[in-house]
Every structure is written in C-alpha cells, then in structure tokens.
Picture 1 (cartoon, rainbow, N blue to C red):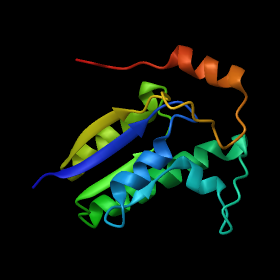
Picture 2 (cartoon, rainbow, N blue to C red):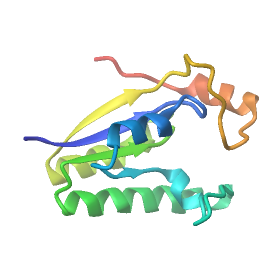
Picture 3 (cartoon, helix red, strand yellow):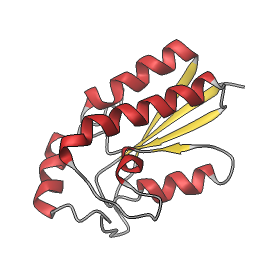
Length: 133
C-alpha cells in the first residue's frame, strides 16, 4: 500500500475543511494553517504577521506524521500559489509519499467562515493556477 499525502486546495469557503473531515473520518489526521489561529475553544483569530509561523507549523505536523509512517495524511489549505505546495512535494518525495492534489470548488454556495472580504477572495482567484498535466 502506498503512503498518501492528500493536499486539498481551494478558495476560502469552498468546503476544504468540511471535505477533509469527511474523508479523514476518525482514521487520518488533517492539518491546516487555520489550526495555528484556532484556540482550544474553537475561536479563530487570524494575524497576518504570524502567517509564516502557521505555514511552518502545518508543515512540521505533516512531517511528524510522515515520520510516524501515517498511511494517509490530509492537508487542507488554500494553496492558491504553487510555491505554497512545493515544501509538501519535497517532503513527500523524501518520505516516500504519493501526493494527490484536489481542488475543491465552491459549487454549493458556501461562505468562508473567517470573514475574508469577497474582493480579497477574488484577488486570490486571479492568481490560482491548476496544473492538469
């Protein structure tokens, strides 16, 4: 059986977190940059000055799960820019994981739960690139 890293990517409100939880069930870990900004009571407080720390923490959790030989690891982030995924591709190669990137589309009319303004989401959408081959 192949060890699998599943990267769920999409714009805020697309349903990445919901899909991640559905796929993971109680079987597999789900890591997200959002975890860094969520306290023990579930309150989300974003601080853009700490975004680099959030990305590092998410990658570190993923690496620890890989070193523990977790069969399936799910990472739920926007990943709108290719460079955001590169450290995960590198880590997966080093640890012998097959990577699957899944783009989650907001076809259900979902709303982002973090209060990101629509104009910011539209700027993210313009930069978003999907690699099909």
